[in-house]
Length: 264
Image (cartoon, rainbow, N blue to C red; front, side):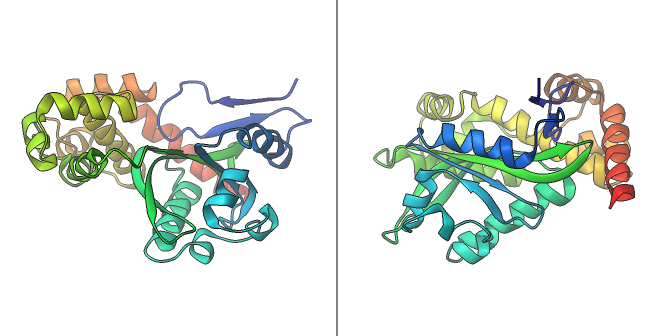
């Protein structure tokens, strides 16, 4: 029977692997589209290698203020959304498609049909067939706009993304957010099901994964750039979140990218 599965070893930047002779990206997208049409608080989409929509759910149609899915299919994010949203989303898409980057737990703004904007938590993953990227899929989970503290949490999350290579403490994040530490911890846990420090660790490992694939720096240098003074601690955490040691991860990802290029 055909399956869609997270690749063995789990972890960052593995994408969604598709196997089975009966399965195609189109058929899988159609099934997921029907499912996510039932999810009124979640935007769902599948895009092809040109970052053009090939499947969307009804919630995304309503959010864009159009009448039908056909008005979205075939368009890219920068063609659909106003600035600065469109170019930002399109840049994310290209990173997912070209570099097999995964996007996890990204708190970001999404424009609404009435001209306003609301908060969502975004996830994007490459779709792989025979080790080759054939598209991407993603969701944006709606965050309750009535909670004024979301803006404060967003400031703390932005700080994490900008300063993950430094020594970041929970009290510093709380000061940036203008919240007490316990309040910040409760909000982050509710939004991401992670503590602020777990979110920091994931951000650091995401950044380390990109550095390992893109450059030739040593594991020690990558660890230091991502806020780890202890290489062994970095290796343990990297393996816990990706399923592979840093060197094995670099080797597997580069072999996968080289194989994709040979098939192009």
